[in-house]
Image 1 (cartoon, rainbow, N blue to C red):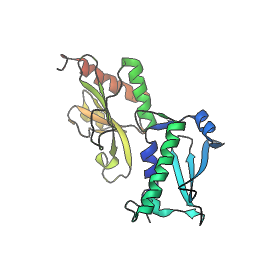
Image 2: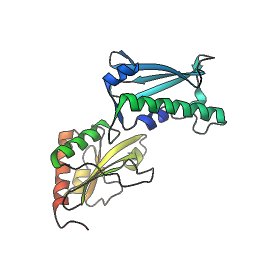
Image 3: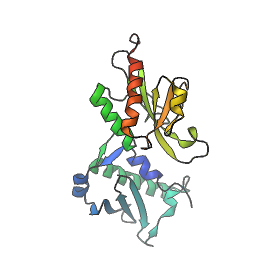
Image 4: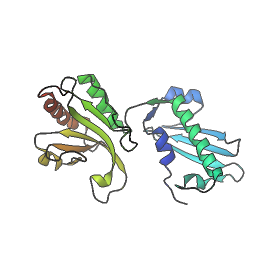
Length: 233
């Protein structure tokens, strides 16, 4: 009964970060660096055990209160029957309520992407734009130079296989324009640009392989390129 055990929680909490005081007020119990909460739902037929780990990642387990066992059909990608869909919908509603009550909305999923975003706003005053409505690109944020309106950064989620053949999982990347893309992309944590001209752009994995301090000069170089020329109409 496979299915991605993280998918439901990741879909709800992907761009949220926990607030400890609000978690405590809501009823989460702290054990070391971990927060835990249990709630019954679906007229008491199920119990959700929700855990927030030290880095803010949320996991959950849904228990059938009659059998006291995990309700595995919830995790199937294509479950059969309206009952399972009903349970899943109720669980998602429970999680969304927790997100609104205990978490703070952030622009991106990864901690490094949000740190970079904050520094961009503090340094140049540019907030990310999210111009695409398509679901596949809806969480991709663009940074534009305020005067020329040219892009100097693009943060977007991709599968690792877009960067490294055969590697599983997903990662957020930062695309920037640099003077010597071929040389820059040859170093650890940097890759030929995904979805952009590889002659001028590179992709940086925002998984802390590179430190924020190492990324910043590359982003500043891209900002300098965007500052050139006339404003786009």
